[in-house]
Amino acid sequence: MPSLEDAKAAVAAFPTPSYVPVAVFAGGTSGVGQAMAEALARQLHGRVHIILLGRNAAAAQRILDSFPKPASASEDGGWKHEFVQCDANSMKNVQAVCAELKTRLKRVNFLVMSAAGPRGNSFTESDVTEEGIDDHLSMRYFSRYLYVRELLPLVKAAEASGQHAHVMSVLGAGFGMGFSLKDPMLHEERARSWKFLQGLTPKFAAVKGMVRGVGYNDGLIAYFAAQNPSIAFTHIMPGQVWTAGAQTLDLGWLLAPLGWLLTLQRRIFLVIPQDDCAQYMLSALLSPDTERGGAFFTSMHGSVVGGHVFPADYDAQRDWRDEDTRTGYLQGVRVKGYGGSDKTVTELNKWTEEVLEGVLSGSAA
Ligand SMILES: NC(=O)c1ccc[n+]([C@@H]2O[C@H](COP(=O)([O-])OP(=O)(O)OC[C@H]3O[C@@H](n4cnc5c(N)ncnc54)[C@H](OP(=O)(O)O)[C@@H]3O)[C@@H](O)[C@H]2O)c1
Image (cartoon, rainbow, N blue to C red; front, side):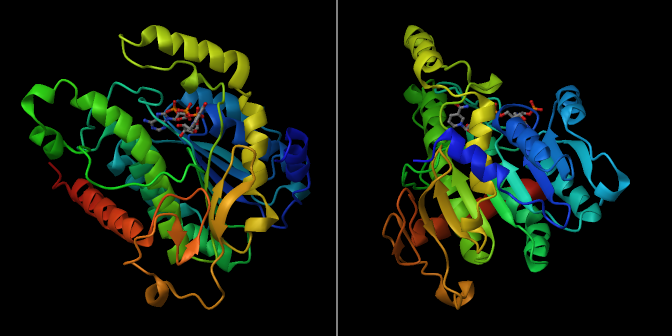
């Protein structure tokens, strides 16, 4: 298990690229995403194009102002530090922001998604967004899927130029959480649930949203990696991190004292500062071991729990095994810490596309 010193050394060993990397942090205005953006800016002495996505413009400005700035014109090379506002609870917003980015960026080298959203730590509250998506999943899964799908041409352009190309979702990797799609995630499915259970439906949905989001992120990574085998896709676990969004644990009024106790226990024994977490996360993002591309499921210490690097002659159209039901297998290979199967990934992808199509075309319930 890599130590914090190992992670720091790995980040420090990242050579300054000849080009100015473009790094997008969806969730870069606080928490793990903020700390990763800051650490990357420091490592590259500010010679990087960083885009922080989020809602809080004032917080973003404070973070951007704190980045080192290249001292001389010769170090310039097109660096930029900017904030782009996006409430990612809305898929239409995500799509619009990605469309805007595509009009002016030529490539994206690093796409990091870490925003958990308003329901970040609530095991009891859930609702549906105005677009009809479960609000645990809108931030933790659907917005991330859409960011990847929409910005993929820019990530591919980076890879095609022989540059770093890495997509990372910071959520809860390594548990091998299996997933099915039969859950009350959307409006119409909630409406169908039994009347006498209706008061509890949000609570069931909250827990399911939390748990399913983790499995779905495994599916997201597996799907896009399989379609784009020479690009690196990582689902990573940040560990227990003392970020602004993770300082309370909502278990409902009945279990509130347990929630306080667990929060206290986390504070004393478990949590790590977000800057330390960022070193682990960044060591995985910049790792030479992922440069050939593939799907990686990575621990809170930045080490790969399980991964799959696709063979050089792999062809997604020809080789994808959409009937393989074995959980934890990707393309016939057992991947430790991974919870999908080629069949569930195929189904998840189909369902996700249908949901997004409904929302983005305006025909959703
Ligand atoms: N922290 C932990 O202990 C822990 C443990 C396990 C897993 N995780 C997972 O690791 C990831 C990172 O954790 P974290 O604690 O850094 O998460 P976080 O505190 O929830 O992330 C904060 C970021 O999310 C953005 N955000 C929230 N709502 C948004 C919205 N509607 N639209 C756009 N951006 C929004 C915030 O930006 P604005 O405020 O500017 O909108 C901010 O940049 C999360 O997915 C979390 O679930 C964390």
